[in-house]
Image (cartoon, rainbow, N blue to C red; front, side, top):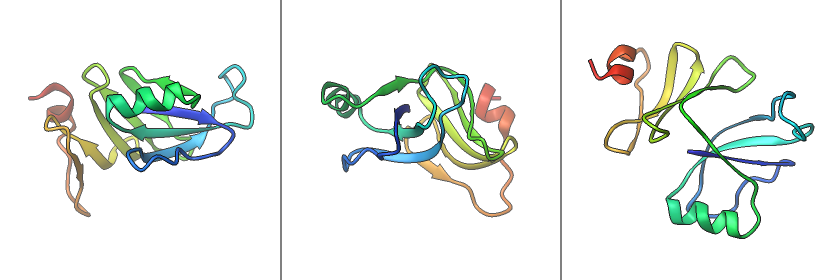
Length: 118
């Protein structure tokens, strides 16, 4: 997962999936009036976007708030991610298989197992 940060234009490449967007946090230098698009794509697609001038921000393990109560959790050296509606509600996740998995309404997510594999 990576961020495309610009003045609001979504990445148009068919190979890029936008999972979440948020206003760029005010703490980011030069971020005023910009939007962060949390995207998923293969490495060669990211390289092509970067080469064509798209502003790409690599993400590291952590939690990135969306400004609306949810956010994106990233771990495993950036290989795994979760989209959250709230800090405790998982909307979508990519598991060890690398394939996105949605959750079923009312389904409980084993956060300890997802994070620590236990």
